[in-house]
Length: 162
Image (cartoon, rainbow, N blue to C red):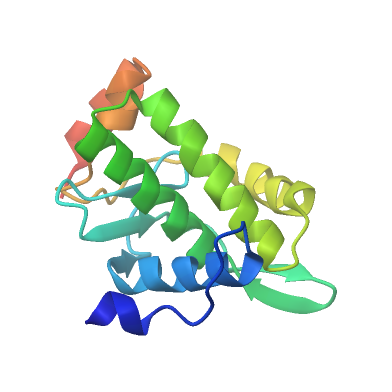
């Protein structure tokens, strides 16, 4: 069974090694695309099989002169958020809060300070949110934009979907 083979560390307590296993396991469950314009930095397909990360977001964050891939943290956030929306029918704001806390813990577990990660994301967020949408996936789940009543962005997204 795939799930059993992914468990490399065991603990009933909150454990960084177990969380690392979770982040890796989640990344293996979806296709990840960096081909599209995705407002709010990242999103997911309607069927939850693809996580979209904006094509303008750098793939790595420099930490202590090392490039660290940020994709696993975003994937973790997006998968958890989508599961909470679809399976438990939570409002986007609630699902986002829970997913953000899991993302934060995954970032910290990897040895990155949350403040540094947030600074990196904020540096790119505004440019991504204000970019001219040229390429939007046809199956992008629009729930976050609907739940936040972001109608101007929704109009731009639906007009540009591939």
